[in-house]
Image (cartoon, rainbow over all chains, first blue to last red; front, side, top):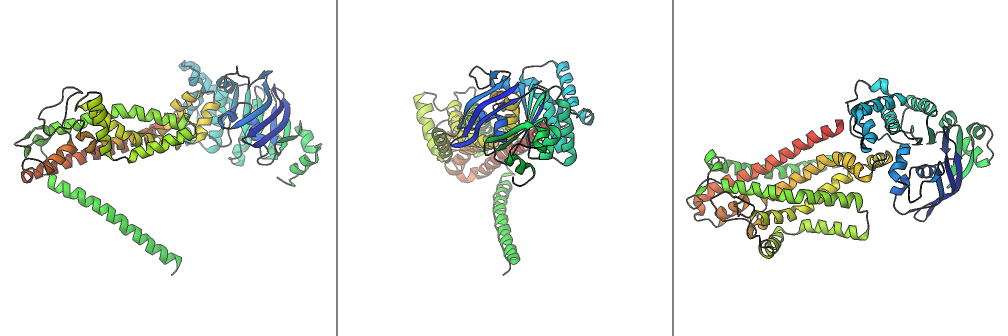
Length: 248
Length: 284
């Protein structure tokens, strides 16, 4: 279970997240929506500590995964990131072969067993619904794949290290509609084994893929509820306005 | 005048200027090839200077220059690449780091004779290496460090951060991300910088003047504490202060041609290596 307790986050003097508390259950898909700059991506990146890479940032409050505060000094960030995978907005495969892209996470863990890696690569590609398309060209450069395939490759790459949680930061915003729907189907299937948190600009996408939705605005979590309820009868007026396209 | 004719005139001027520069370059090259090609022979490349350096070959100078290239590379490549990795990947952007960056660039603009004098003072005299390959290589190494550091930094900066975040997000440490993702991608451009630095080393005269170069030494070095002849210095000697300048003129052109060919080969090698590594990086 993922839990944020009264989280405030600052970029220098800029107060990006304001008093956010939220609980996310295992094996669910949770969508974060909201206008640009509302803090949803910042909030997402707290959970694999990607914000650590940005200098001059500050966090107060607690982020817990399975009861463990992930900002505790005793936490090994690389171990955390092996448990919390991430897929980015723009597909960012490495300039390596398709095979080596998937094997990357295993290799940095020090795994050298050829058969094991082979098996993990195949399994991850199958889970990411990419195996059939690439099984004959695993030794080809990942750059030869289409944008949509590259993004599924990035998902497969994240799956290969067996995380429990997958964070997706607008994973389909750079893709065409067909590739987008493939990614959405994939998210549905992955829910069985993973907890998924997805940031999206596309409200239909949030409605299609998620169980729960959080609406962010100006650094605050305005409303957080079952997706159905959010889209049919939101409690807050701002949510209603945003969803019906009156602003944002 | 319309914008279109303006553009035509501007392009015309650019083209003429461009051709002028390239033309001058080819003129110099052609002049040296024309005057030097007749001297090049197996004896010239593998023989020792004879008759007061007015005839014979330039083998000791070729070997000397190759020794200095090798020596300075061994010293400057690792130092330069590692400091560039530190400054671009780890050091951040504090006041101190910016200061060091500015100073590195300034160092690249220091006249090479200053490096020569510094090398003489430190390596030849204070450390007691004497006029030797080691003193010359250290001096040349220092001279090329700024170039290597800067080109390596640029090569690293050219790698988009998305690859670094991708590596880190997969649970790789920073060092693993640099080793397995960033460096292989930057390698083609790093190589280019290295080979350019070799081109510079093979052509420099001032830094070796007081640290290694011998006026006339018709034997090959046997160790790193030996003096050697070197192509650029040999060229300078037979063109300005030889025993019989008129008689050694053809030798000077031949030496110049050999020096140019070495630099040219280095540049070709750089291009070939870059192509090869770019291809390899994509499919490795």
